[in-house]
Length: 127
Image 1 (spheres, rainbow, N blue to C red):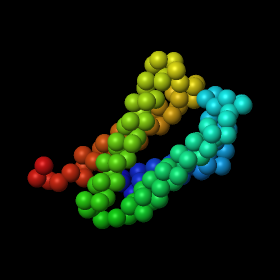
Image 2 (cartoon, one colour; image 1 turned 45 degrees about the horizontal axis):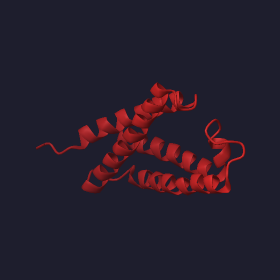
Image 3 (tube, one colour; image 1 turned 135 degrees about the vertical axis):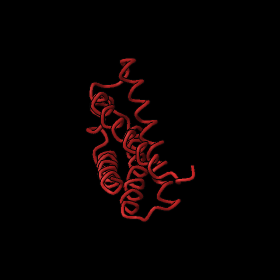
């Protein structure tokens, strides 16, 4: 279960990272104004880098043997996707998010649940 999860998460995060780097205004449709400042576009592009870094981390960890470092990757994904999902929940319930946020909410909750299950399964037997 973990290898497909890390693979899918890596591909998803790479797509988001590339979209932020290569087409930030189009990726932010509904949230980024048509007359967005160059500073805003630069900030969106800046965010693409960490997405790509985490994508590589997931990709390289997908076939790793169970170990502390792999469990750290799982926990980092759980925290990252969990925080993003909570942000999506807030945006959707408050009406502050763009319409597309409801779709992202489902995706991010799915990743959060999958990484929570992976974290649960990865814990030491003595815990």
